[in-house]
Image (tube, rainbow, N blue to C red; front, side, top):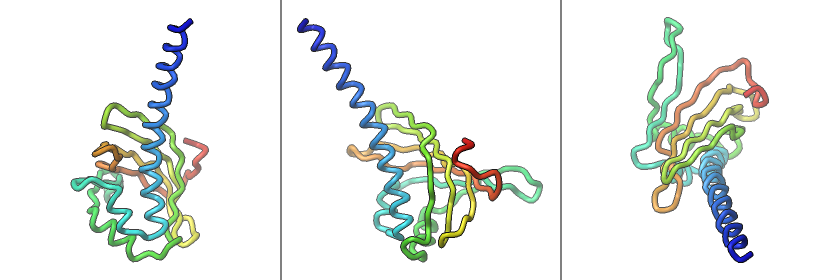
Length: 153
């Protein structure tokens, strides 16, 4: 009977640890959107690693998709020019995977600016756990104005 309780405790702790890792990734991503919504550039900068990469998928003149680099400093500057409440990105967590100090998250979104719908798409996050805290190392997204529904993903 004692072995049963030991195994139950070990399994429970393992399950709790997995849940905690996923929850901490969600918290790191939620921190990003909280910072954006509140135009909090200090908090925003704290969401990323020092060498973070931001990209978006856009279509060129030939209507071919290409990944376009975005500057983290430029992103922070753009957010700094908004007022609290102007930027509202609504996401759902479709998938989160973790292994040791690496995490990936797939989050479909709807983006609103000053209360008006702007665009939708999907964010793909790569996060690294540094000193026990998840930081965004890589963020790439898609953007479109049609076929937008968080329920359709």
